[in-house]
Length: 187
Image 1: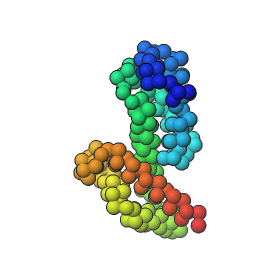
Image 2: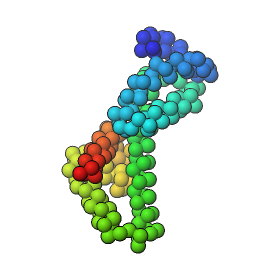
Image 3: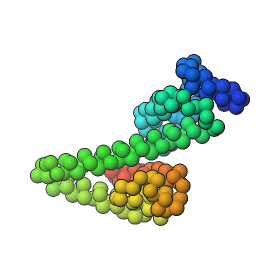
């Protein structure tokens, strides 16, 4: 387990990985994969998505292996990379869902029954209610991201907060929306 290694040994493994040593990479992967999965699962609440993100994160680590020797805190670097990938994936999924709903509505407006159209309007209204009830900072981050399509860096600059705070607020906002929407749809 890598956590049992001294920092010098971890640094040595990272140097070996930067020199294309697959065995060193395997050791790091096996040392971190379960903790990383648990961390990502708390963000996504999806086993499949969490597994994919862990794999993608380590793939990216391998692709960036030539730069690993310069990383001072690999644990923080790895978890931040995975968190960013999780947030980006959730954002992508959210946008894709909205785009698909809009395309369906645009391409085939007459195929919706009045009940489907009413349900869509009710869900949209409920999402707006949820967003309105979010804590002020989460609401601001969500609104700037989703309605004004600002990037994390732009939101951080505009709200004068760090990018990690933007990411945390976005994660919490999406989690709240998802949980409340699930409850409403299961009623």
